[in-house]
Image (cartoon, rainbow, N blue to C red; front, side, top):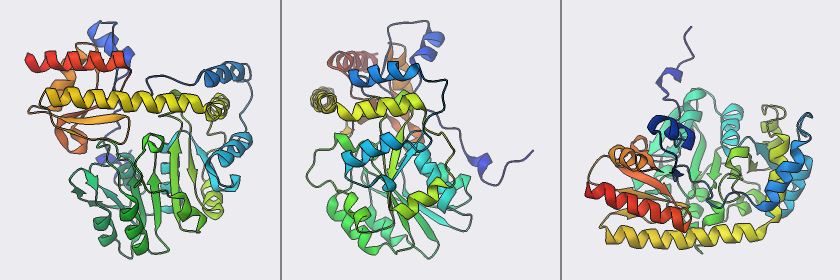
Length: 361
């Protein structure tokens, strides 16, 4: 049986290898994973307690509308609950954008070397992908604005971008938004929002408050350390949220994840510590990479894109045999690069020592 047009051209998404798979393949146990941009501190202790407490209720269906989590999120972000939609990770919210708004006759704009899910959304729903070039390692919002046509339906912007770690600025965003027609939906994918501390980072909530057709997606997977819970959210006008809820699967956010997310929101100290360990680790890795004479892209997230004079797959495989899992990124247009998550001081030291050994072999 043949799938609908476009599906056969999609390569299945390959995430960072899990520790268990590497253990099976190589027969080694002392492994660290720096491949998927997870929080090295793990979840908040408050979230872990909430997980334990909620586990006794898993015989029950979750609140399909996530009422209490929406109340907490609304207060935390500064929106009304009616402006929130929950997803099985923010990835599902991106998928819901496609299910709700993208048709085969439409065009979807996104940058080269941007998050692969944007391409998946376009292909699954039969739209034409308009892929704009990067400006160095940064998404070119002027090129995106120039690419808008009467067929443009959605523009995806990852800020910061994965895997480059770069961000578009407030000024660049304002110039783009001034050129976006009212019938085009702009999606700001802000999975790494909490890691950014630059003053020129664009705050996108005002566009929502102005009634613009925007969706802002964020997640509990990164700084909150709940990647395994699969819970994220989207922010948009109530009419957009109401329409997306028509296609959202019932009970898409499980009971334990909702409880963990509510607890995580209350632990501001854990978020602060996560930001501090990331900033300190980033500085250490920059210094070590400089000393090794390696090129890299300065990052606003919790990961770094590092370049080599050899295929990144080779570097990744060699590091994996030393028990350090990183992410090769040839599929994003960087065949001689890897992406490494910033870990704990001990994990960063292990990566550096492993990389030095690999480059010396």
